[in-house]
Length: 351
Ligand code: IPM
Ligand code: MG
Image 1 (cartoon, rainbow, N blue to C red):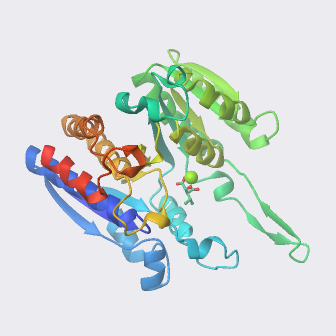
Image 2 (image 1 turned 135 degrees about the vertical axis):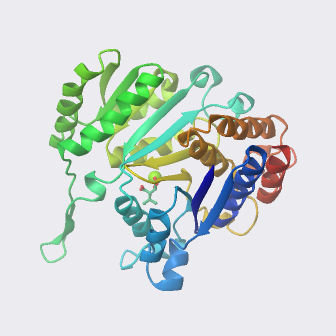
């Protein structure tokens, strides 16, 4: 297969972790006879520095015409403590999600047998965890009306959802549940928020089209608690943009390292693959960041292209590296800590 992949390395550790995923994808391409063309493009603080905006039109062109986008991370500390900054790297990510129509963010959480004792949670609570949070990504409070009023003394952000935005996300959730254990949980705050009541009403109306799926409705605050108490009780969860942002960070600690969890963002056309961790600026340039979340995101890319053998080969070699201790310092625990680039080389060589 010929694949044209947009490569958006971004900020912080983004360039280092995506470089390892590129090695792995190239090794897969060689092994399975695919022809990969990488199209690098600027995004984030790196793009602000180069051209003054975090998601330039030229980058959008590259992404919109690609078969898939591999993304590293975005964000730079020099913007974090400056509320007056007019242009921020994160705006690039939001603009990209919106312009590419990436309305569903797929964030799986699973455990790795060889790492189960690295989790801050007890083994008996997390064993068997295999859930997916499907986060709405182009609506809600992230994109609602916001501003200041009363002479700058009041600020507001609004959470707005249209029925069709909920429907298209829920449809993905139901379909995903059908392929898995047929359990879907709608996470909302319908005891307080009107937009959540629309979520519940919309999902309830869709239940009849998927009679085999067992649907539950839970409030987001209770889910925040249960997710770390009994994560294995969940399968597919659907939720609004902000709730999903928070719950997916929470869920990422279950596996033992945030450096492990991949994600995809999908919509109608091109899909984007990225680690769920951020730009980790403290580690940038040190060759110490864990590249596995990005490598596993590349596995999701192959899976979505219906190249399951390729996806499985990546997941298997990642499991092998974990089992053999070829890991970066976040997972090495007294043993030898390998460099980011060494882990990438090892994975590619072992494919
Ligand atoms: C994420 C991140 C982004 C978000 C930030 C960087 C804008 O936290 O992808 O979860 O809030 O969506
Ligand atoms: Mg987040």
